[in-house]
Each structure stands twice: as C-alpha cells, then as structure tokens.
Amino acid sequence: MIAMPKVPFPAANFRFDSTSEAALAWFFNIAMFGQDFAAFVQLSNALLIPQGWSLALELWFYLLVPLLWRTSDNTLWSILGASLVMRLIIILSPLPFVPWQQRFFPAELMFFMIGMLSFRHADDIRRLISGGRGCMLAICVLIVFVGWVIPSTIWSETQPKPMWPYSVILAVLLYLTLPAVFEFTKNSRIDRNIGEFSYPIYLTHIMVGYFFEPAQRLWDGLLLLALSIAVSAPLVYFVELPLERWRNNRLRFVIPSSPPNVKATSESPDMLQSDTIRSKYEH
Image (cartoon, rainbow, N blue to C red; front, side):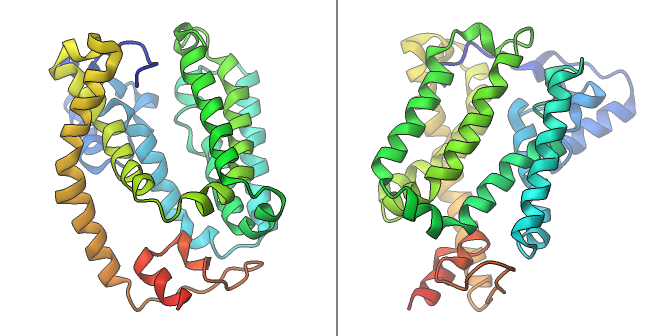
C-alpha cells in the first residue's frame, strides 16, 4: 500500500450510457461474480471496489476446486501449462495488458494451479527446502523489490510488460517455499491475524482513501494503512469470523475423499476444510 502511487476512486464520476449498462454494473457490484469481465465491457470504472476483479477470479477458481481437487497431477500440470502458453501468447500479442493479463481467468489460472500443486507435493518439497524462516525472507525480499524498489512508473499501463517476468518468478518461488513457510507459521497467532486482516484491508483501502483523501499522502501512506485496519476490524470480527464458525459447524462431520496421487495424510483436508475438521484427522 505504501509503495503504490495515489489511486483514484473511479466510480465517483462514472456515468452510464444505458439502462443495461447500469443493470450490469449493479450486478457486478452486488454479486462480485463478473467483476473480472467488467473491463471487457468498459465498466471497470463503475465498480465500487476497483480491485474487486481479483476476488471475482478467486470465486471462479473456488467453483472449479471440487473438480480440480479430484484430478491427477498430470492433469493439473497440463492445465498450468496451457494457461502459461495462453499468457505468453497474450504477452507477445498487441492485446492490452488490462484486461487480458490481469483479468482474463484462463491466463490467470496458472497461479492457482501453482498453489494447488505446491500443496499436493508439500511433503516432497519440504524435504528439499525446509527452512521456513529463510523462505519467508526470500518472498519478502522479492515482494519489496517489485512493489517498492522498482519505480512507480512501471505500474502504469504504458509500461506493463516488464512486470510479467516478476509474476512468473514469484509463482515459482511460492511453489517452492509455501510448504516450508506454512510449517513455520501454522501455529502463529500473529500470522493468523495478519491473514485475517490482509484481504479486508486490500478490499477497502482505495475506498477509504477516496473518502478521506489526505490519508493517501500523509505519513507516506501509514495513515491510510491505519484507517484501513480500523475499517477492516468490524468486517473481520462481525462478518468473517462468525461466518467461519458457521462454516466449521456445517462441515464438522464432512470427510473429504483424497484425490488421485495424493496421500491421505492429516494435511489432505487443508485444501477444502477448516481447522476444526483438520484437528479430527490429526487425532
């Protein structure tokens, strides 16, 4: 947040050309589904949460998880490879960076596949790379380098292509380091709290900056961070955590089936199930 340049709130001055445009924008904002598609129909500036397109991509992936989780490793690698090839074709084509490289789900699917495959091979990867503290440091260094050290002009749409190699490097780095990092931090209350607040902060900081514009420039963004945390707290404690408890209660007696090529270990439920269910497997 601190590294990013000042971001406007586009929905404030957006005007619809037709009733159908307005209806579609209302659907995108209420349902979240389709926000990744908004840029293809020139409705990105009608989104109340401009970065909500990334949440829409996650929702598509979550719909596919029950199918993907039961497929073989070879199938997942094939999907990853096809997504990577599609992404490279887009990069080499005259298609614009937005929306084709940042909202087109088939080209983004490779990053989700990396995470799923890293989870499946967690035990094997940890035998090769087991230092969780060092892995976490490596990830932080790369994120800081890309998000802070590189000049802010690289984030503009006129210079997007130098960014894609860092995305691929980050994906490979996460594949190799996530198992060790998870093992290192899985019992950390600090890590859990950061995780619970990170997404609400991500979703609200642009809106907070719009309604309190000085926060975008005072204290190098630290005021915006503090206000975003304050706005996120009710979402975490009164929405997210109660929903998580409700989900845990519903899934308490659900025993997931192990997918092909995945050993039925105590970690297997992690992909789809909660800590409540995982504790049953561990005991």
